[in-house]
Each structure stands twice: as structure tokens, then as C-alpha cells.
Image (cartoon, rainbow, N blue to C red):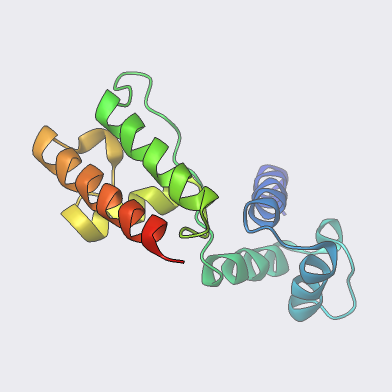
Length: 140
């Protein structure tokens, strides 16, 4: 078994559990679904680690992409991020992560990489988020 794969997979599993907001019992149930005789992700073999990661993907978790050193996020993306977090605070967005915002951007503009949004596309995303925020605030 490749030790670096194991280490990376275990790290992803722990991050996924935390980002999905799983309780300890839910987390243990997922491990039990993959390997009924195991109670900890550290006890899983390589194939079981892969199966557990696939379960997290099915639950909607996506690993974060590393930020590019050469291409920082433009200010308009930070504005969209602020609106996204505001929607999350109001309960309109389930996952506050960058990957969820990126999937929203892809649905709205067809561009998933936030660094690649041009001004027009970023404006479309921001306006869509503003409209969503206004609708959320109007609800009783």
C-alpha cells in the first residue's frame, strides 16, 4: 500500500467529515457502511479508503482546489464570496465552502474556476447572489 496515498486519503476523509458537518455517529456510520468490522478510518485498507471517499463525494463533498500563486482571486470574486457567506448565515446555502460557490458559478456562467471569471461573468454571479439574498430576506 502506498503510504502517501493512505496519508492523503485519511486527511481528505477527516476534512470531508468536518466540512459536511457530520456528527461523530454519522461519521462512524459511514465507516461502518464501507467496512462493517471497522470503527475508525485509520483501520481501513486502501480500497475501503477509496470507497469511503466515494461516499463523501455522493454526499456532495468536493476537495478544495489549491489556490494559484500566479493568479490571485479578483476583488469581484471576494464580493461573491461575501454574498455567499451571507446566504449561508441566513440558511439559504448549505455548504459555505469555495467549491460550492464554484459549482454555483458554473451553473450560472458555465465557468467553474473562479479565477477565470471575466468582469461580465462575475457581475452575473454577483447579481444572481444579490437577487437570491433579497428573496431570502423577504421570506418570513
